[in-house]
Length: 166
Image 1 (cartoon, helix red, strand yellow):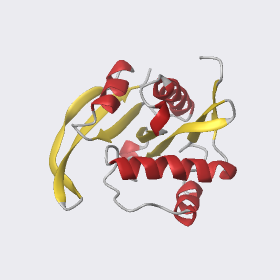
Image 2: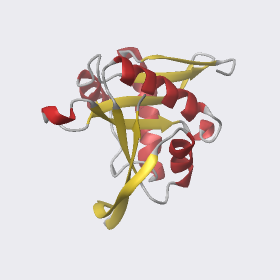
Image 3: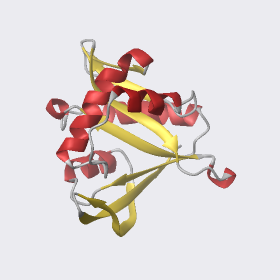
């Protein structure tokens, strides 16, 4: 790990920074089908739904949060109990600088510890920076859902990627 970058489990005190980074992702239209900016009440409810198994991790550069990742339920069916859905957001000015790889490796370590054997994620086919991060870290494309959702009133395709954890 590069000097200065540290990962840790997120706390309620981190929600403002997590919210700001998430809202950047919403505004940039590259990482989520969400269109409306979120507020602290939304993030507080979201955080309450992330228990120890569905961890939220942050990465800091000199005590400033520059990214976060969370393990989310993929399905509430017991057959999928070992599969987690991934969310990862990096602050704009830190994208493409290796922060995502550090955070991804850490959330994968936590996933294994929490009895997950697989992580899936959904990304836009046009999000080449994100796909580069995932591929570099061992994720493979499973397929593309055509017209999976709407963003700004237009249909958007969504790519699914996966990684079997070892």
